[in-house]
Image (cartoon, rainbow, N blue to C red; front, side, top):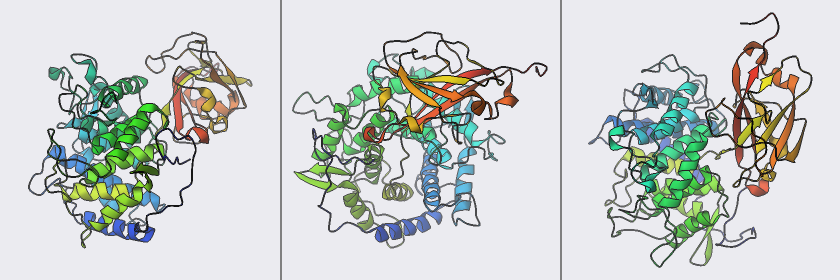
Length: 533
């Protein structure tokens, strides 16, 4: 359900009769997208890449640029109901394949996960978006160190690296939960900024989204816990005349540089950790954008530009991803309710060149705006609002108070499962009819026979498939009963003797945003007599 945010503190959902009479039509937007795609296709290099800039090209810029462009071509195919890899039905399929091959040819695969050798966070975050949006978990990689592996395996390796590279509380506690350019242990991982963190969180958000937007990976709970701490440290605290709810560049406060570009990242991060749009810190961030809607030109801090959306295609993109993550369609500017997308689309279309590329709006802005390919990618991604639904990770306990969790493939009984409530999560907000248990998160699963509310278990923060046997913790849980034979029919008979993860998926009720939820726990599949491996 889309939420219409009219003003801070309003509790009613209103329908607006006002409209932007100059708003671009759907036809004009579609024509702009088609022109942009034709131009971008013509910019692809023989090696499959899209260069950052003809005057400045290197691996660490070209991988990220290529990934954002590939993402755009993939999303266009899916919007049209086409397979992005099928060259007989999609005219840009070869562009997608060549672009992904270029990306995979430059990955690094080491003990810390799958990443890239320079500016790892930007490259890995954007690569995650492109790989996840392929909607092809079993597609086999044909180039680079991961040749022979699947897209799903590669994406999981990137998720592992994002977990490894996230800042811990080592030297500066205010940096905890964000991301640096890389993860060099010599740096003690003591830097985090809202530019790197913005692309890291987009990457893990795309990877965790269910099909067809992503491949349904689980974000480690500790990653989201640390990110929640980072959000509090990087947001203006609203405690004085000069503080107004936007996002700083650095959480440790050396360079504040609050602007719409960074605040768009902030709002998306809030959605990723499970905030509700009504939460105070979300409303403060929205309020910042409303109050700075018309910012352009110079600002006194480190970067000599406002990086408001009217100056920067990247700011349009980051603002869009934040608003879309919460389903925000309207905001209040100067006492008037406006459709933010209509205004942004008008500016994007007005600045498109006749050849399909985009003009540079403010020549004093860097931040990637000097790259014609990036300008086009950001403009096109914004026009089609390319952000998958953010998935909320929940705690799941199969066979509460049991450890490990054996499942007898001959049983005609039920398999009990609990989705656990916490201090920050009320399980009564879950739409019980949406719940399924799955062997593979990306396929159809089994619905529960019945459900109830009861405090039966305590969340476990250790490694997946480790466990404890603790009972209730004082917070209400959603208890579910699944038909054991229906669960066994999900190919469990071939897995006798193995401990395997099962996934619970579902969504919140519409009145709580309809956010997808996902959690995992493991079962030990008991072997049949005479069939021991």
